[in-house]
Image (cartoon, rainbow, N blue to C red):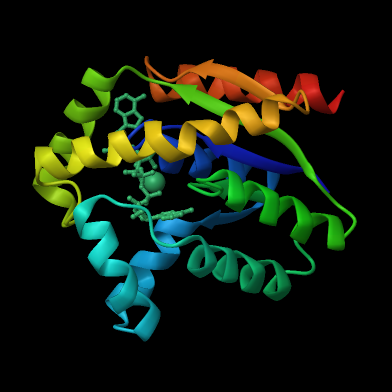
Length: 192
Ligand code: AP5
Ligand code: MG
């Protein structure tokens, strides 16, 4: 089993590159943002709780997202590996994930960290906000709040995995194909 974290700030291309990576490697894609948006669409209790945080650009509480990931891991015992997108986002989430994976005799193989300038992130998200219907994309203040939350709580996740020598930084600006090629190179190097 080879498990990957695709890491990076809001708008860095995690979702875009995840689609390509799962097609190439057959990994199970676990995006906590996508799961939360589907809970909101179905108006579940969890979705209603999460919406208040997401609309403000704040992180949803750790216990909520850790519980979601635990269920997703349990529901996919046959997966050849997982691609985590937007999770973990705090040190507590990283520690919880490591424990959940260890219980299944597996671990994170690689953390791929996409690097994109703040100016480019805001530009991409405002642009997508015109059509996405995502309530956290159509307001620059909320986009900035998401980026601030990333610096305050999420960038520490890369430092956490760096201690284990698992992080590779990849330039996240350029064409989608170029970035995908860089990600593949890192994965192939790690697996060989
Ligand atoms: P989440 O859904 O994870 O959103 P995010 O991390 O803020 O980032 P995005 O999904 O907007 O961007 P992305 O990196 O996937 O980039 P994408 O490929 O879409 O989280 C949303 C919210 O849910 C959080 O704020 C939080 O409230 C909550 N949440 C989620 N997980 C949580 C957790 N673990 N703990 C607590 N709370 C959690 O690309 C962005 C745009 O750029 C697109 O329009 C795309 O077409 C474009 N683009 C992509 N690549 C390129 C390129 N190379 N050049 C130009 N444009 C590009
Ligand atoms: Mg995404």
